[in-house]
Amino acid sequence: MRRAVLTAVVFLAGLAVGSGAFGARAASARKYINLPGRAVVAPFSDAVLVGDTLYLAGRIGFLPGTRQVPATAEEEAKLVLDQFKTVLAEAGMTMDDLVSVQVFCSDVKLFDSWNKVYPTYFGKDLPARAFIGSGPLLFGARFEMQAIALRR
Image 1 (cartoon, rainbow, N blue to C red):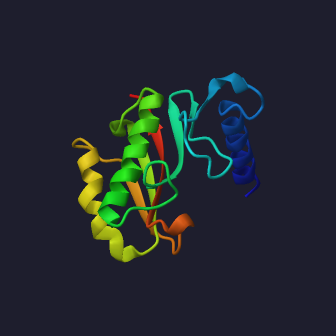
Image 2 (image 1 turned 90 degrees about the vertical axis):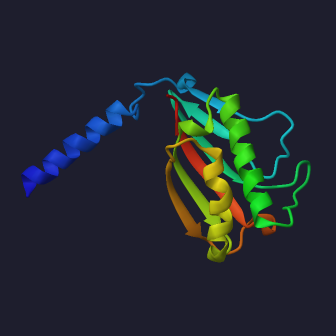
């Protein structure tokens, strides 16, 4: 038992050192990406690039220049995914660089609506994905998506 605990502590300490938890990586390794002219809804960055990994904040499919969502779920899904394409491009990446996606949905009955649009934004290989029935989302949105991308 003691040996297992010691092994776990050594392993976790190695992870902390390897991930820069003890100052091994400088803060300058992070690049904060914010699209010019985006409407600020809450205090967050659109994405944060750390090395070759891009962490993308949750996005809602607002109609351009508003805080309103479109009439149809499919149109809203397209707007969400278009925003991701724009943020990824700002970081020099594409949708094919996404490795993990989480989709929050106000009503799981919209699963098919999302799936009509989603695969059209990718090549042959799709990122890992979770589709989460979350209940109500901000501003009456049906979908919110967040993701992680890894530069190829």
